[in-house]
Image (cartoon, rainbow, N blue to C red; front, side, top):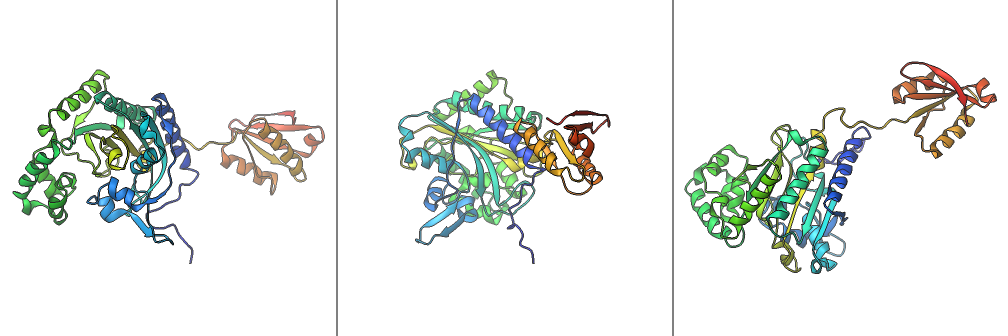
Amino acid sequence: MTIQAIRGTRDILPDETPRWRFLEQTAREVFALHGFGEVRTPLLEKTELFTRAVGETTDIVEKEMYTFADRNGDSLTLRPEGTASVVRALVEHGLDRVPPWKVYYLGPMFRHERPQKGRYRQFHQIGCEWFGAEGPAADAEMLAMAMRFFRRAGLGDKVTLEINSLGCGVCRPPYRGLLTDSLHARLESLCPTCRLRLERNPLRVLDCKEEGCRRVARESPIMADHLCGACGPHFDGVKGHLEAMGIPYQLNGLMVRGLDYYTRTGFEITTTALGSQNAVAAGGRYDALVAEMGGRPTPSIGFAMGVERLALLLDEGLVKAPVPTLFVAAAEGEAGRAAVWAERWREAGIAVETHLEGSLKTQMKKAGRVGSPWCVIVGVEESQRGKVILREMAGGGQEELSGE
């Protein structure tokens, strides 16, 4: 019996990795334009980090985390998202004392979800966090940077920016009361899960995908209509900056995000090209999180993108696997000399593929499959004269050149 990958995980094979490298490189280039540097955090963290940061009543903490006790009895968790780890690093290294700190990260996350297209139990994110980002202009810049990434990746026409305000500690509690009353009046229309959510975290009802709950949500009061005297002008400022920069957006009053730490601006970048899994990037402001994790009060905003979903969005043929410039084939007895020349060309920076086993005919068939535009043939007579044959694979033309 063969051993297979664990359910919900997958291998990223060489024909797919060029897309991933393209997305990662595009992200690095765009983030550098805005002054962001890379941070790398551990895959394993203390479980308490996520229960405190993400929220004990979230689906992530209640149902999806990979948590276990190590040999010392400590409860550890494979990171389910990136922000909490970056905040922990900020506080641990005292960087909250000298804001701003602008960082991005790339890497795997882990959630025990139902596997489906573009959604796995080990998935990969590209994310950004901006600590010390105060005011609506910072929110708008973060949104502009996210949309610049999609344009640079050739995906600008496939996505839509949706924004909402999630309020703050002043205006959210009274809104929560209004929402709870509204939902109780339609209790029979809610799914069993949302009936439980209603008592613990009623805002999560607005994010349910069940059709009955969606109908109730559309008839419920929305946060943006009940913002306090600080959150209202902040959200108006964000919209004004986006409009001034010419960045189109849509208001989505039902967006609540799945993590408890978000305040004020929340956003998603969505697509209609991936079916029900329509969000390819999401984030928002989290002004209270750093202080809640033991640091100094630090206004902050961030977002993350799912690499698997981004890779699905890329057009076929937009990013192709690289092919070597040269393929080297050798006649019988000339493999050693061909290998020496191939190494010299590689030292000169030329990508060279070889297959020095079997007949010359077999090697030429391999050359055709590899896709190199040129093939160097090391023949017996030519080799004795220090020469090789350079053949153009597409047209079949060839000439004799010095092997040196």
